[in-house]
Amino acid sequence: MLRSFALSVLLAATGFGAPAAAADPAPAPGLRSASSGPCAGLYQVTGIPFTMCTHGPDATPPGLSIDRSVAPLPAVAANGVGTTALPVCEGDGVSGKRVEVLYVHGSTNRYAQYLETFRTLAEAVDTIFFESARETGGSRRVRYVTETINGACRPVVRDVQIPDAALNANDWAPLLNAVRAAGYTRTDRKYLQFVDASVFCGIGGFAGDTRKSDANRSNSGPEYARADNGCWSAGVAAHELGHTLGAVNNNAPNASGAAHCVDEYDVMCYKDGPNVTIRISCPDRSRGEQRLDCNHDDYYHTNPPAGSYLATNYNVADNHFLIRDGAPTPTTFRLVNGASNTCLDAPNSSSADGTQLIIWTCNGGTNQAVSQVGTTLRLLGKCLDASGDRVVLMPCGSQQWTHRTDGSVLHVQSGRCITPTGGGTANFTLLVLAGCNGQPAQRWTRS
Image 1 (spheres, one colour):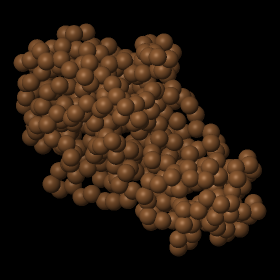
Image 2 (image 1 turned 180 degrees about the vertical axis):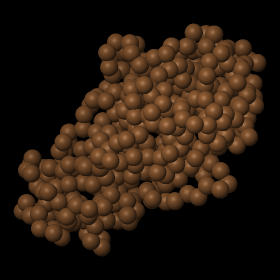
Image 3 (image 1 turned 90 degrees about the vertical axis):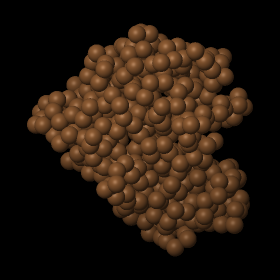
Image 4 (image 1 turned 90 degrees about the horizontal axis):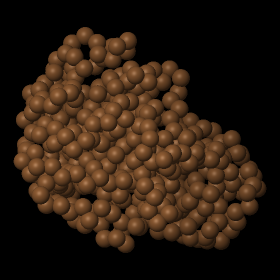
């Protein structure tokens, strides 16, 4: 599961199927274990006038506490994190299926104090979905309700006051009913709620519908994702929104059986029960803070291989609340080094196995034209690979690379990052793997 914000089972024909085993006894008041119907194998929220399923409240991640409200981001910090604006907006900002951000509070109103924080967190969630899609060679963005502020597209944050009793109830239903009474009931909305209370860390609606169909219940609303003030982080927000978008179905290859995954590191993965065994399949710990779906085989892939689980079951990347074609990732790009402003390069355009890569003045040549296919990085028909400490070209196979949000390019199998030898900046400096340190020599931008 995403740990902090970076400053900090159903038949395919119907989606319902035969009665499933009921979830364990309800983990919170107002949740009923369901053994049949649309919430089979999950919990059904009671005390509300519509059917809503959930896997229950999520555990509080390390570093956060439901008893300690997260501090607001200072304006300068908020403007320096995530995207500071949404790079891609669509249409008039209101029409169609969208995620709408709500600040839900009682008699104490901290809207002005936290507005920029909520905007920035929502934008960071969008970055998580985009960068995760880019790992699979595609593009997805969260389609928010938006407005233009100083020429920039920003998520709208609604100021929603409800009675204190509903806000602080240890049962989700009173808050849901109060928010609905305030008018937030649209069927073309997922509501991402930052709740000024300390009842839960996070909880989200979850359909558990495995059908690969536009009629999948994860493609409709209203649906609600909630993060309370001790867990106001991009991590928790992305996790709970992920549930409302359909992650993680319990028939997925690496499912925990409780709407999460077991192959860390991944936004949606964590040990959610005493009998759950976690595997480290993607050892880059930053993925747990920044990326969806380790190996992209359980719930999020923009172009899943034919015959794979996501090619035949529900895929969050197909969700109607995401922008499919915003800011499409170029088919090729250059990797420009942050210290030298030169490019990753195959010397003399050599594609021979074992060719060690270098940095060289950016020139637009094919020997600098990198492409990403899944988790591989490709150049001149070969794939970037590691040979000891050297970064080389080899035939494509099981190589895994991650371009992280700090700009570093991580070799997943070794846990090390691409670096010019000795931090050098001169042309023909050989590229090697070294411990990741976040310094300019390890920062690469796509151009």
